[in-house]
Length: 237
Image (cartoon, rainbow, N blue to C red; front, side, top):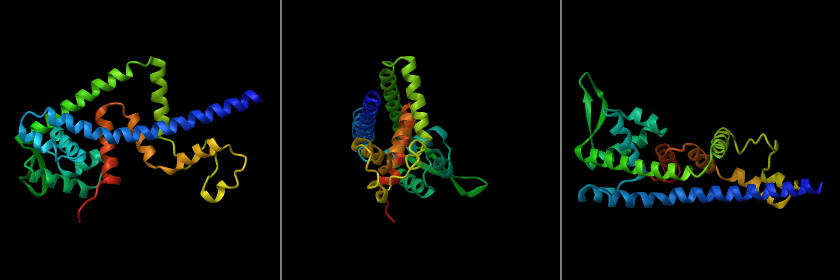
């Protein structure tokens, strides 16, 4: 019985530590945007590109990335690539056109459909962004090489399960911990109660764990861009 109680306390402590680490990872991903922008500026092929890099947002870079890969491409396809609204894609592409990074053209037999292409300047920025992803891929691979095959398999399985698990509708605990019910849980240990509440207070945690599941840098960056676009960007009317 003593061993069981100690095991539970240790497990609760580790859960608490894991949740705190996940939150720290979220902050790390957000702070890395500045580091990546500095890399892009420092490695720009010319002063014009370097100056534009100071104004480019993460979402602008990824919309440009989609255009560079798929051109000629329309806004609907770009929207599907990122899972963001067509309105947001429209605003971003207008900004890219204004900066002469991309241009649009019409289909000969359909004047309503607009296709986007990169300009010469846009192509330089696209290739620079590709070089950044290549640099990140090398770093991610070097970091993960420290783990053995069993450890990597465990990480993949844990992240896949996390991706398909709801923190709100938890099958493990099978009960609500809404504020009106927390006072009734008098037998719950403090650390456990805190850990359980942490599971429900931040929807962004699902996004972060999903990002971790996408181990290649391109999908990580897309997920971060979506998070920033949905929760943190302010759009003008």
